Length: 124
Image (tube, rainbow, N blue to C red):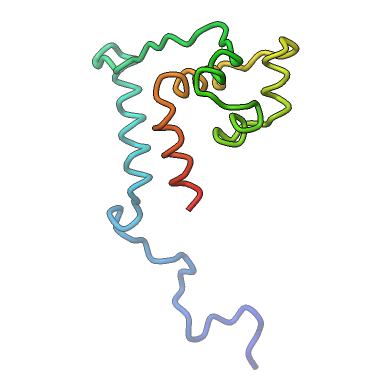
C-alpha cells in the first residue's frame, strides 16, 4: 500500500537541476554587476567616474519667462504640462519652484521648442 511519503517515480533528490550561470544572467543583471564593479573600483581609487556640474538658478522669474514666450498663464501651464494654479502661485510669490522644476523651467527658457516637441511626441 503506497504511503504519502512514497517517492516512487521521482528521483531521490527534490532539488531542481542547476543551470549554467550564463542562462541565469540577464542584461539588467549584467549592467547591475558592471555598475557595482565600477563603484567598487571608484571607492578603491582605481577608477575616476564622470561627474556633472550644472548651474540651476536659485530663482526663476516665471512671469518674465512666460511673457517672453508670449503665453497666458493657462496657455503656459497647458503647453508645458504644469498646473495653472501653481504657475499663478509662483508668479504671485506665494510659492517657489523646487530644484527639478527650476531645471525644467531653465530648459523651457533656453530651448522651448525642444520641450514642446518632447511633450508632443509623448502624447501620441
